[in-house]
Length: 172
Image (cartoon, rainbow, N blue to C red; front, side):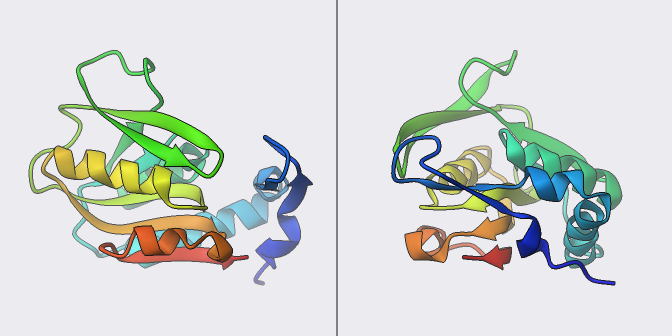
């Protein structure tokens, strides 16, 4: 039985700032069968591909990237906010739809030529995911695909990722 995942996404108006309509994934995460469906869908998409790692973007990207990496039997590379990683890092600054931020990745997290899939929960304007892809490429690795649970199509984030194969499960 397939669950309608859209029914489990809660809209929260004016969060984190006025004018933003936040897509809350916690009801989906609390629904075991729905969460399993998401991971199973991602695993089916990437099984059999020659991937070396799953790259998860802090913080909600970790929720999907960790079980996916486990299912695929490959490594997990966390991309984090500044000051959260204990080793030497690559860093990149980027713009959000409501500000700016910075992401970091350990310098030794990916070998040159490693093939990865980058996972996050939501694609909005594409700034966060584009920054994550830039970090992967700075390490000399290759982004095989970017995947998100939710794509906010009206923000045109996919345009910012035009150089990458992209997959989203839900579009708004």
